[in-house]
Image (cartoon, each protein chain N blue to C red):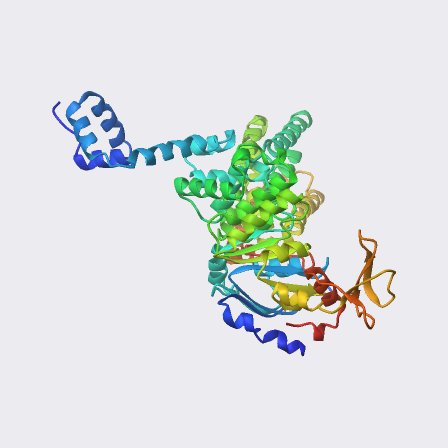
Length: 279
Length: 301
């Protein structure tokens, strides 16, 4: 053997505190080096074995992560964040299945009717609804415990919002790919989706977790009806899906995100049913 | 004694180290005063909160747990003032809360659920967190079912999961909203064990309908009605309110505020006894009933 494991590392190894990649090389080396094994035996502290057994026991005892958590862990999400996300109601299969179904139907309608309008109208509403359904007393069974937890309510909301947005936008983008005939126009829902979601959240402290997204969703449908009525016969796209409309959507999304940030502390209290919003 | 005397500490309060202190708490729901000028002081140990339905017990607990802000008044918990964002967060770090209807993610196991709550309580180090989760699950007697899904557990077991979640992170202030409701006698006994142990070095506020819980567990008791505190003192003091006001008779006594035929065939009456009545030893329940029945101004400790 041309080299030996440093004694300090062997002590850490004995305590179970040596981290990879040093751990791996120490493991491999110890198998073939009697000298290092002797040093290891000498530095082995009494009680270390018990501690190691306890660690092993705890490891065997810890629940095996569910598929969603495993996927998140594989994507590099921290273990505790993955557990928080696993408790998000809308990341469950039922919600994802519903979103897929709605998108599939609007894609089929678009392909049959040669118009992507229905898809563009529906797709931005899905992330809005998804985010609305991922928090709040009506949908989160542990809401009361969550509110009084020291983890900042806004942080939890943002973790869940980002997860729902990523899932929703990915499914929407996949659906958009199924409409190749409409080119980039089929992605026109993305910015409105962000604008609606951010506005819905920003209005929540004032109008509550049900009122705000409902009002924003209703506003979106009303806006499209008005845009449809105002559309001149030559126009193919509704106003929100034109270049100018997309610019407005981006502006609204940025403004709402700023407002949301300013109101972040308001997500720290339970909404009172008699006062209409979180205080 | 005037209502203002509520604000004056009793002899017992003078002896205890105050950990939770509230003054003038008020909260309205529409026109209803859910809390009406509530002031209190709590120290270490288990304090029982008794009162009929709609008395404002849950509202008081939710305010003290920072789930809802009060319209009026102020309070501190272990020196932390929830009026500021910083104080609120510090308070929440010291808080264990079992809500009246605790919710669960039904697909989680007790281990996963308590682990989830531990993360909400900022225990991010996995090894330390899992150690803590194992500790509280053992404390709540859930060792054998920690791998089962919560939706497959009985109501009593779920209640224990919620208690374990409240205990995680070793909080200094435990708020328990009717934790023994719907439990069978054996489960209730186990709950009392855990709560009594928790109260040895913490401040525990326990809302309950069971005067028995208070008699067996609590070193202090508050009685609420109509959004106000009607009594604050020791269980013995509450019992003493009924001294000389419980008597036995062979027939129904029209002077009794409450009276019922006991298993022995005689009537047990609570109220204003007639001259020469056969007086009985009062219970905490008698004191509680008379406190609810009395004039708020005279029922302070």
